[in-house]
Length: 321
Picture 1 (cartoon, rainbow, N blue to C red):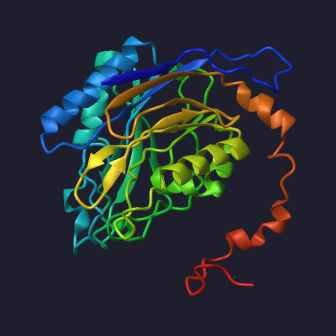
Picture 2 (cartoon, rainbow, N blue to C red):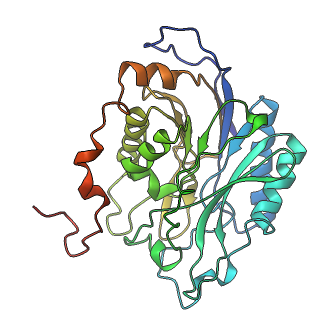
């Protein structure tokens, strides 16, 4: 398993005051789904162990971490029959055991069972403390509907509550606030802006993205990366993006997991087709430096954004005058 690091944060070009917060060392693990669950868990545990050995305080794992990606085909009458409980299921159990064993915060993603009579569940990210306690949970808000990614037939959109954009914090992580949306959420600038307004320093997107079944020659990896990095620039946030890799049948996932800073610089990036551990030090006060020089939050015009909060007009998918 490749280990790639960035232990010297790049200079903060807009810095005028000495940083107040200590750098935060974080990690992610890029892996591939395997039918042999024991082998897959061993691989992930190896990656978590390497992250902990290198001093990372938290490690982040890809979307639906232990599942084969389900949405190649449309879900049946009860697609969430095999979904799990986020506090007692196999994903939480693994994350808790690994967190305790290695003394590190472990973030993972799972298909959450939440029966509401429609056969669907939630796509949920969790954060577990080194004591094995669930200290954060966020449900994916935006659900894709395109060919090969029929997630609307598996996942219910996360509810529009005050908790939807609440970043997570914990005393043992230090002075940092972490937003935990998921995959398709990364394409929406509104998500990054909302987390930034809530004071998030870091946004983590557990991801499962790869080829397009309808257009197999179209490589979306550069667009995917540009959008996330750009959203991090305008939100003034670090972005941590663990993706899976490998051929799962209809889709070949393209890895390329990365960590970027508020200036839009890629601190460390994984290859497209190999397991990898990325470890980076985040100079957290770069957020303040950048948003002081380019005060995007202060110069907003929310009074002109009314249309953004109007109901979606599904008869006009490309907008209308």
